[in-house]
Image 1 (tube, each protein chain N blue to C red):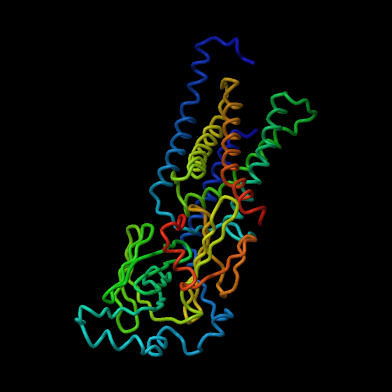
Image 2: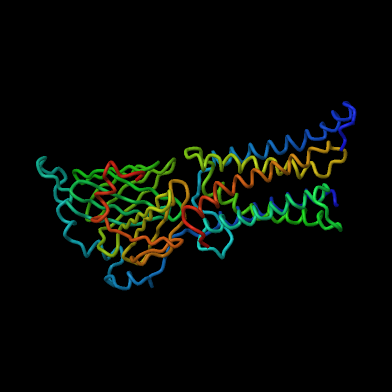
Length: 185
Length: 239
């Protein structure tokens, strides 16, 4: 869209990202440090209605992953890559995103509070890293959204990263559970 | 779009996290206090932990009379099962001796440790992941200390008889090993934890001694006589 912008404007526009990126980096680092240093309690308060915390995490992550797919399609609609009528893609994108984020909170809380970051098993290592990065990039994107005059690539790149990380989180947790234990509630 | 919308989203996430932190910090321990568990109903009605001490005179006498036994004769019982509460932590510990070999399990529903070690001269030393347990056998009790990571708690475990004591179940599912551990006290208290692989696990439901179903996986609890050999075997994977 704005590939013809002159360089100085670009530089000023990218400068708008300094605070969001710093804040996101701080969040990711803080989660990693907490996961490493906090002694795992083995237990955390979570949502009732499942047979156990593993099932709770598996299904909330699956809900978030499904909503993330809604995110991708509604984002395509917002950017005009999918022709749609009406102004619904915006609200759908915002609310599916909010729900997806909130669905991940009890999951990440249980992971970090009860279990902690671990690096001794590839699945758990990638899951730990993806989890910290996910919230970092998410914070960066949330803080970037209100900024006016950002380069056009910023939000798609941030959104694409958040989506990719969430799918990575789902593959290293829910998908592993479904293929190891089965589809259990 | 409200420019503050994304900030509200983040704020709700922060508030949720704060709520979960408070709820988790104040949540009750995972020990099952039910005395209505079927196995407890079948147990000796007198068998409170205190009553058990008195009711097991077999192991009580000999250690007290001689402080320094003959070097040839090891006074350590050949077969004994102990279970009791860990002070401060509130979890349970169970220790079983079989001919000088010792297995143990410490669990408060949240953290757990499988222990293996030796018994000699009425002294037990057991080790597990991040855990060291030392205990002295006196008066039909195993009394000692458990060191878990940077923490240290005292415990006193009385002699117990089936159906009280230590249970373990293992199962292999696609690509992962499931290990369940349970401790049952004569007063009906029980605690347990089930691990899926090395890194995922959760507190077990109240223990009734029968087959425990966990996410559709049947787990058959075994007593120490049944599991001690496979548990102590060096070839046992990831035990």
